[in-house]
Every structure is written in C-alpha cells, then in structure tokens.
Image (cartoon, rainbow, N blue to C red; front, side):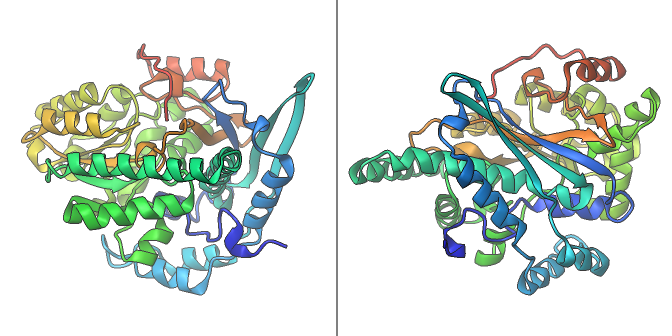
Length: 418
C-alpha cells in the first residue's frame, strides 16, 4: 500500500489559482452545466502509452478522487482577499468542501502489433469537473518523467538534476540584469515533478527577491507565504460559447465573460485573455469603458511583439495612457524571449511574465506539450482557436464554424514546443 506522500497529487490546492477564481466566477449560475474535458498530447513523436502503464495512471487518478479539501486549505482560501474584501464567498467555499470530482474515463487501445495509445476524458458538471484539468496534467506529465528517470543509473539521475540546477542558475543570473522584468511561476501543469517545482519557486523567490511576484500553484503559495498568481483561462469563454444556441450568441460569448468577470472581481483581477477565438476580435470586444478600467491583457499565443503592439494601438485609439496598463506574457517563455519582450516594451507599457514549462521543466529531458481542454458543452463540440492555429482544439468542422463566426484570419501555425 502506497502512503499518501508517494502519490503525485496529494492536495486539491496543488493546482493553478485561476481554477478557483474561474469556478467562483461561474458559481452558482453555471456550476451544473454538463461538460467534457479531453486530454491531448501535442508532442507527436512521443507516444505516452509506451512510457505510462495503465495501472499506474489509474492508481494516481483514483487517488485524486479520494482527496478532500482540508479545513486548513479552506481557511487559506477564505483569507485570499488581496484584491477585495472577500474574494471567495462562503457559499462557494462550502460547495468546494463538499465537492466530489467525477470519475475519469481512461481507455488503452491497441493501434497495431505491440502498439497502443490511451484516451483520457472527464465528464460531469462544470463544477467540479474543471479541477481535473490541472490534476490530470500533473499526473500524466509526472508519470512520464518518472518512467524516464527509472531507466537511469544513480549517476545519470544526479546529472539530470545538476543540469537543471545549472540551467536555473544561468537563467536567474540573466534575469538579475533586468530587475524590472517581473516574473511569476506558471509552471504547475507541465512541471518535471512537484519537488522540482518547489525547488525552482523557492530558489527564484530567494535569488530574485521582489522581482519574483509569486506562484500560480495555490499549495506552494499557502505553504511558503507567497502571493497566489492568476486570473482566468480560456475555458470560461469556451463553455459560455458552447452553451450558445446561435451564431450571434457564440460571437457574444467573450464579451459576456468580460462582463461576468468584471461584475464578480472588478479592478483587482481585471486582466483580459483575448485569444480564445483570436485576439483580433477579443481585443475589440473590450469597450471604451473597459479599456480605461481594466488593468490590462494576458498574451498566451501567437507572436508576443505583434500582440503587444496591437494592444498599444488599441489603447491609443481609446485615449488610454498605456504606461498605466499591463500585459502579462505567458506563452512558451524562455529567458531569452522574456528579455527581448521586456526591452521592446520597456517604458511603453508595464510587463510581467508568467514563466511556465521552461522554468519548472528544463533539466535536459525533452519537455512535452500536453493539454486538457473542454471538448464538449451540453453535448456540443467546444472550440478554442488561439492566435496560433496549431494550438486550436475542437473538431475540424466546429473549428471552421468558429473561424467563420469570429472572422478568424490568423495564419500562424507554429509547432507547440511547450
């Protein structure tokens, strides 16, 4: 019998902060909307079923079903009032305490002699099914790297961690040269493992000081008195659009999400994510009033420089002083492009950087691009387009419908590295 500490996920707060802010945003009005989340491996050369045994994956997923939200964790969430008097109301916290995650649907299928693949889906009410996204990715990613490490000698394992440490040192030394380049940890979902993420976060916090803003991982934030970071992701747009009954309602989904978010959180968490259906329409969905009142935008796909210039042009047209606004860059960041983006926009708009896979999973082993996205809403196909069509999710026919509705014209089709 394995002890709890030997499992990959041991806390429901071992997740991104925006899972809780998003769930609270759609709670209680949309909490029972039926949804389905599906796993996708965007790193085609790697067949995960060759590395992850079905019994191991079932054991880890099954354990998550048994993890309660502890009283101490609820107490912590009750006190996360950085941005307003009470971020999470008691009704939401009571629901979270009683919450049971729906069962997973895992199938290993033979695709030829000696060949197999697996599918992994999660279906149920939007709340609590939403939480499987991060936990599922933590587990699949964790089992993959665990399998790689088991094949190495002790000396080879030591070399992996030595490589990771030296690379982290080099990156931190570069970042120290740009003390106004503000960094947050966004690396939970594709980390090498939990202990390595904690090491990276604590090292960055100690070495970078105030330059390191905090972590999206709620458990780490709670454990080490760090600021929990994050606002919203693509799924809310995807679900609200998936509930729509006609093209007009689909087109209005992003604006509806903006209104719901502002009404719930106001200025405190007002960072808009515009690229779910393409940033061209996502940015223009911001009204003149929202352009002035919201803090800024998050960039999560496409060319960051082009995106930033588009935002600056938008602010100029709205008569907004961009120096008072912020852009959070969070798409496949390396230290090199953090520095490039920072220098390009320095003095023009405030920038921060949500550093993900390259921060928590750069030890000399190939990083994977894995996602778990909403695939169905009320039995209808769900879609995400992004500013890089290679990151699009959904059935091909549904993607074409959404491209028409949102007049999507992006041609960028870059391989997803992270």
